[in-house]
Length: 404
Length: 131
Ligand SMILES: Cc1ncc(COP(=O)(O)O)c(C=O)c1O
Ligand code: FES
Image: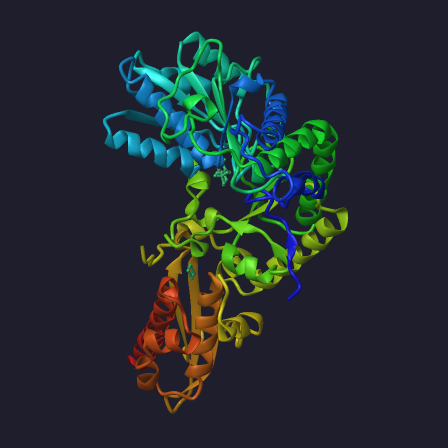
């Protein structure tokens, strides 16, 4: 089977071959436990771990001592939110987070609600950005933590981290940022952005799956109640033997991202524009979901009017993308992120996420644009809604016999 | 989701896509579902003087299973009497296409479309017959 063209870089990224090369010696030859203090196997592993820690820290302008390695951004989000909530619960029991966060943040907050914390799920504006005045208004003397992501996984919208950090610092509220999608794609500086905790994931930036990190600020010091107990690794915040090969790879991936970010972003922006132009110059009724300005360069989320997303994905099966349509999900609920932007259920059903990345080429973009145009035209010929629009009927004016 | 071959076949080569004249008294139209639910099916039948379905057409906004379900029923409907058509059950559609549980409602929609098209035809005929 010939595999489709990969355009789902927000789901995961392939590992960069340079990363793999760096990682390989650490499985068989240099297999020591970095916590072994008594022999050379341990020492060389420890050195590698500390180098990786520096590389990860450098990507976000942190101190290496502020990096706690985890299994990924899901764990980092859990550790940050639960850890802060449990440690500081005597100070207050209120958390604020936007409704468009990843489930790893939202579901963690839900669980804390069951423990008696209160959570404000902050609405977003139609472009996907949070409203800073609404954030400020949501803060109470009880508020201990604000958690806002850097880049959104579905619509790529980038939140105003600097302004959020400033507001949080001024209100003496801690600021956690889920930067699984943002790190390595946009410039992140935990100092100037006044971020207190920040989650990272290896597999979103061309590193391996199963590795991530949590940045935990040292000055002013942020404290956590650990979730996982044991040998006291990672300064007691996250016990467990460090997976040296994964760390070496993650470190290398961060170093490459830091080096190439500026040039890569320019390249991706041009490719994204080419894709958008290639589609919109030949099709009507196409909408961009979320701000096109405050957005990760590698993300394009489009709604194709009158064409349901799952059938669209079948029609462009030579390209691997994802959809916000309910028909693709087990729950049959359309994307909560799109719904939060005020996108109608109908439009959410017609959305396709295109994720571009390091290995995307111009030829792939052109191929995709052509395929999309062809598929949309074919499916619109089959769509009763399209027929009605052609006849000048206003679809919104119709009483539908909806099932749910 | 990896689809069954029959669904793929109907999806890639849909049978009887199109429209009949909805103002023709011999034509019954059924439009079911809702855009907000992600599925709208329009099914049309032409009924001859003997009360037999001589033609059927569909247009569907929906997932691959919804398109396949409607395509399949247009094939089944041709040559059937109205009563025979009314006896088509969604389970038969789901079985034929081997739909997974989450896609059963797509076959329910196709059954509803048949019923709605026939009742539209019948109410039109009452209008025609009336003095
Ligand atoms: C914004 C965001 N946060 C968290 C995660 C979870 O990351 P991981 O797969 O490393 O646990 C993802 C990836 O799915 C994500 O996109
Ligand atoms: S049309 Fe939504 S699941 Fe079939």
